Image (cartoon, rainbow, N blue to C red; front, top):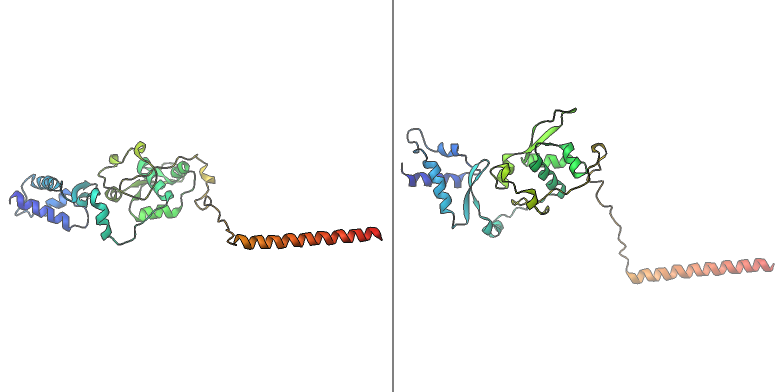
Length: 246
């Protein structure tokens, strides 16, 4: 089996797969009766990566394996094909995810101490359902709190192969929309006692009632109220004068 055919097979498999393929899975494409020569699959990956240099896609290696993906410089145009609504996450969710990613393994209580507020259970649940975080153990302290860490799915989503490829905290700017660049950073807050932490709802601003009455209507009502007060004061003065005369 020549290298050209092996490269075509590997390319077709990566294009057809709906998830990254590991090196073992790529080797498994070839039967025992007609195995690929040693190093030929790896060579095929190198050739495909080189061929993508001037194309709109690139071959990348992630935590779960190899895949083709759209290059960043043409992503804005290709994204118009995806009509589903983009998921947006709250600042609290992104701060929680950032703390788990950079300080794992970490407990919920430790996250609350850094953020200064109680972590909503729905945040942890949402991140677990997205398969971005998982319980990796339990802290050996009273209560045995769960230790959270990130998953391979998290690395795949952000285009990373290993955790050490995360951008340094010094390079991060601010929390924005959840994008592969991971442009968010936990906001430094004063640590509070864990047992008395406010919740996200407690820190939400109180709704403010807005008076939508036009200014001219308000002025008219104000003048009527002022006139009514003046008439009352005059009546009181006349009554007092009459009583003094009697």
